[in-house]
Length: 247
Image (cartoon, rainbow, N blue to C red; front, side, top):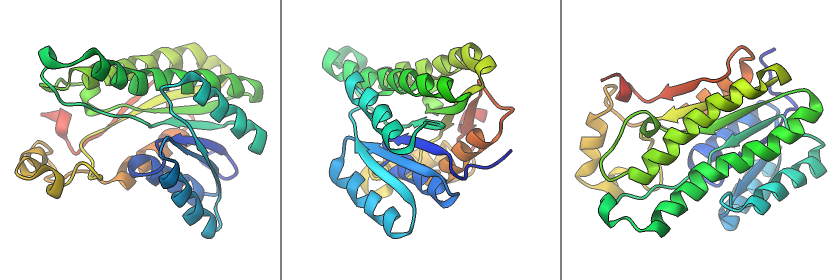
């Protein structure tokens, strides 16, 4: 029941961070993994590392804000592996700006990637899952899909939407054997979220997490694996946030 061996997974935003940690976890469990990212160089580098470790993986470039890219991503996955069992819609961006100064271009870019990208991923992966009798969708949302943050209007809007999109899809496809969940990380150490990049703001960010530190990508990946494995879980917005939203 709780086994990902041989399952075919697509992970977007897989060139680094949570996406890469998730792809590594799936591969370590014997899964067949399609890594996708708009960052071709980074994606190819990680593909080679995993292939050298004996993993069954392939990199397929895609910009999730473009429907044709996502349609092609799913089609190429089916061409190579014959099916899609899991999709992790992880690709996302953020922008911090006072809302009265936020441009439509900035706002639309966040929505196009964070929200529309999830829609495209779900749309085309679910089409394939319906052919094979089921599957698992995990959408990467955020604590900021639950609580507001000043200056994060577009990001708040996109991640709140992802959480309710998740619940809607879970209800729509439960009887078809397709489970849809989201994972909602707190702040995670990454290329852009670290002491060197944030300076004095870093300590204040850590203080908002009762456990006294930020998360690491592998902890979020572990939560994603749980959502994929447990066949009695659907429609869940799973918080993995070091207590951030408990306050």
